[in-house]
Image 1 (cartoon, rainbow, N blue to C red):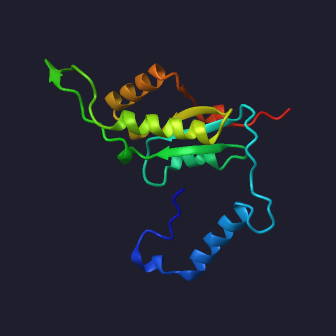
Image 2: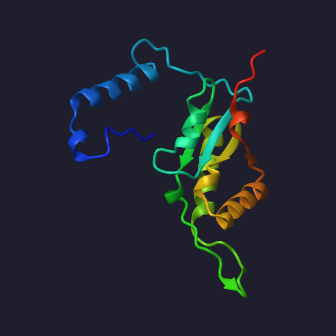
Length: 159
């Protein structure tokens, strides 16, 4: 988990913000009275694996703030180094290089391990990728049998 107090040095030393974050974590983990926030039951619930976007992952966060959405990993675009394939006669030829496949694979595996019995679904921040990047990621996810979802796929269905 990554928690940040502001984005500049003027905020980093704020004790009130640090105490608020510590309290949220303390209570959220159930360290106060043993009642943690959210209990993973592993009953086929959906777990989001966010791919792409900026540092604060706004398109993924729009889904995360909904009730009942579990989050595995959020991989911002800069954590997916991709090298464009070489061009031959104006067309791409060859593989997209870089460590992006590794980043996606280990994040997916860690999410599966952290949420046993869950249905891990990738959500792509479509607007953050160039066409060739989106195509490469989508193809890779399909090769790995990782389901790709849209925002509505993560909503809880009430009975």
